[in-house]
Image (cartoon, rainbow, N blue to C red; front, side, top):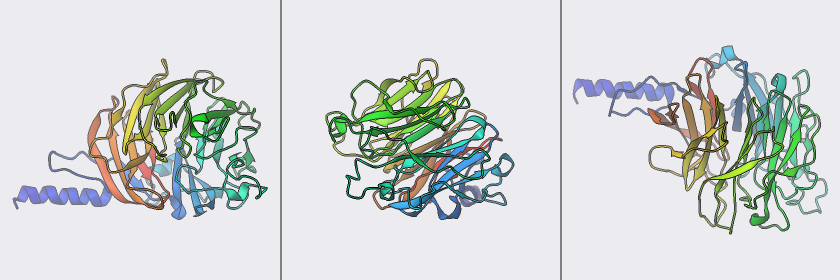
Length: 402
């Protein structure tokens, strides 16, 4: 082997060891800016939010998949650049007061986290069977959409509350969004006149007092699209009154298209638009992701085993043309997004995961225009029922918790 080839091979091997990335011989490799970190304490299903002070707020699951617990930890700005080294997350705080109140089965029914006014943390999740008070009742119709928030001094979470007043029949995952002005939205999809997926609708419960109280849930969208029963949802709020949500429809039992809902009035009213099509006669149990940037958000989702992202304008509330992650699809699911200080977008996802089956982690970095860069990678180690969480570092670059 020529000496230059040996040098390139050793360089790629070293890069792979240090960064768990992938280096191609086709051209010179850029310095890797994606670091991989395991979920603390052997947890799964990490969910991460970075606040205005560059503090990372992390939520994760531990315990029995059908009845476990949620935990919260944080990481300061000064530690993020060294996470996985000497830097570490704070001691965890258990989120749910009732033991075994959370569920990991299916991957998309776990906890969701948002950070609102004054850095207050908000968490919502599907209640486990342990939260159904009357075991003789139809558990499907009485599944809880649980919500809690950090107390005023940030030392513990308040007792969880079931926000469902009338929209029962929760199956797939719910979601939560919060803004710096005290507005909090918790959303889920539930059955309508019957139990068919075509009758399902997205409902939103709103708070204007930092989650202290919530109004009764209301339908978010007037159009009858149905909702894929065991697929997840994702919501995000920006600083100027916009709330965005993604969910999968279920029209004619086979049209499981991705819909974007967008609000200009802090979640009071929404407009909706289809952003991608997928004809499949079964539930793919998929999830979605958002990342906020100047002038709008970037959204990500799965279609036919491939993950896509698209820019959403904060002015028009419309999504641009979907962009697929480069390379051949390998059962890609559960995308997660982050945007760094330079406007670069990290899309991370799971590959090969399934029912009671773990898989691998993969990622791709895009520029501001959502054009793929040369930086990408793969690594083993997505546990069963888990997924990745992408984080942007304040000084540039990214961390993926998995």
